Amino acid sequence: MIRGLVYVSKEEISFYAESLKELAARAASRNAELSVTGYLYYSEGRFLQYLEGESQTVEGLFSRIAADPRHDVVTSLCEDTVSDRRFPTWHMRWLNAGSTKHIELEGVLSDHLVFLQTLKEISPTNHSWHPRVWSMIDKLAETQQRLGLL
Image (cartoon, rainbow, N blue to C red; front, side, top):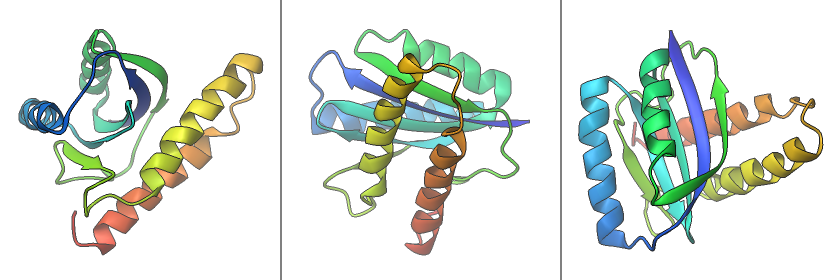
C-alpha cells in the first residue's frame, strides 16, 4: 500500500540555500534507498514536505523527521492509500520561491495547512478539510507534469 503524508514545520535554526541543497541531496539519496518519493518546499522559515511510499516506511521516516531538532512540526496529515504515486520520479525534489520549478500553490498549501491546524485545535472533530489538501497536492503534481518536470 502506498501512503501519502504531508506536513508543515517551522525552522528552529536558520537554513540557507547551501544547507537546504545539502539537506535535499541527502534526503533524495536516502529516499531512493527506501523507495520514497516526494518534494520539499521551503520559504521564510517554513517547510512543507510531501512524502509517498510504503506505509511503514513513510511512518518510520516521518518519525525520524519529526524528531529532528532543527525544525518543529506544526501539522501533518496522512492519507491512508494512494493509488498511484503523485511524484514518481522525485525522490526528494527541493522547490523554493526562487526556483523555476516552484508554483505559488506550495505557499498556499503551506498556509492552508497551518490555518487548518488552528481550526483542528478549536474543533478537533471536523475533518471535512482533508480532501481539499489532497486536491491541492494533486494539482501540484498535475502542474509539475505539465511543466515536464515529472
